[in-house]
Image 1: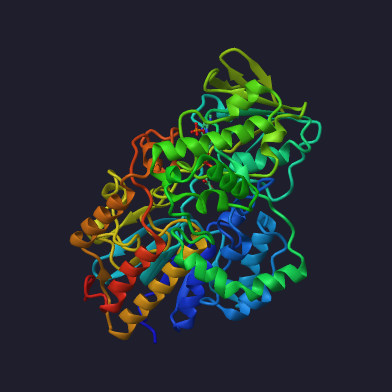
Image 2: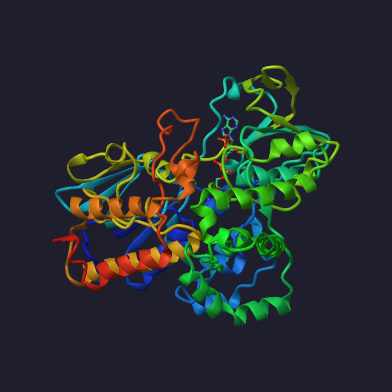
Length: 538
Ligand code: NA7
């Protein structure tokens, strides 16, 4: 079964998050010599790093876990305690999988890969870690996530602060105590909103520095009783079937009626019903055209704005919390549990830093144009160098030393989000332009695809397997055509490749695949079913 005894491994996997966990399981099933290399001290990826207070799923726990495609036994044995599990529980889920299948045996932790170079003479990959350790393999699977490389704000003095400060994506393992402390949070994305509503419960005083408000919606989380978990378990086939048929892997199917074809009263009733429901249903079971039609979008945005006005007592604060420059759902919709009511608390203050920009971080706090804020703790919920950032953080070199970062100056260019031209024997799980949405559904499919592909190469003695320019051009064109007409692409966000803290990320690109999940899988299955003849195999 072994591919090449001269190489250390048949397959190297970078990253021990959900992608790496499933990948090592599959490689072991194929009888391949495989190893995961991980920078953290244990498994979990996103759920290992993002330990900030309030971190949890925004998609239903039971639509997020692996399906029977991975293991029926795993599905039978694991129970969730909440509809939207918290970070500690999700981390336990990752650990549970690794314990159950003894996966840590093939994982090396505390090892940060700094480079991955293709070796032309041996058709193999050579990885080098921070300490100079080297590892070679025939195949490389990148499982490095889409939101991994976190970014601090480009505000002068960020490192001068003498109090405690944390980025949400590098939260300490021991709980941070906010009691009686003056806390400042910068950032009101999905992360900031989860953290703010939680920190406000114990902080002496909390100041939120908001640059852009977000269209946040009630999560409506609840515990799952053991009986309810058994009922959910009995519906797993149906739940995964809906996820498979849906646009982006969630358990919701959108309403195809044009918003404006429905009477105002019926719309209002429908939207009230949606607003009362759990999770992303408010976005994803909504009229599909709120994502493409400006007028439809404006109507629903106004509906949500009125909800915010009802919930926030001070009208000026309410207006500051309502987005004015982008419509509902044109960015990732953050989910909240009492977020807006947080601003009714006497210990919480909202500062609009679009109006009064932050000038610098001082030794003792934050200085805006007109005010000085003395703080004990600063929390940076300032986001990530998303999607491509995971790749540019490492030195990836393909055939003849070509640099991946040079390939992607104008935005990512891939084939199925799985391959890059000039990077043979390398497959990406959650690479740019791969099926998007409810990420574990994409991961599960991609790992399955990659496993079949590597098995095919092994069985056919293929030692060089990659894609070509024609495939990449076609795929990139398809990705761009799927993006046409979506309002989200006219808005700055990590999903359009913007990160204002990074000089090289100020121009909008199509950073993610916006076609349907069934459409994606059809195209990927097509390549596999024709024995990968579209690829370059030798
Ligand atoms: P996001 O969604 O990128 O949000 C980052 C937030 O931080 C956003 O509100 C930014 O405001 C704000 N920010 C960033 N830099 C600054 C500076 N320099 N000054 C003031 N405010 C700043 O990251 P998240 O971690 O919340 O979410 C990422 C994804 O993780 C999320 O979508 C989920 O899928 C999970 P801006 O909007 O740029 O004005």
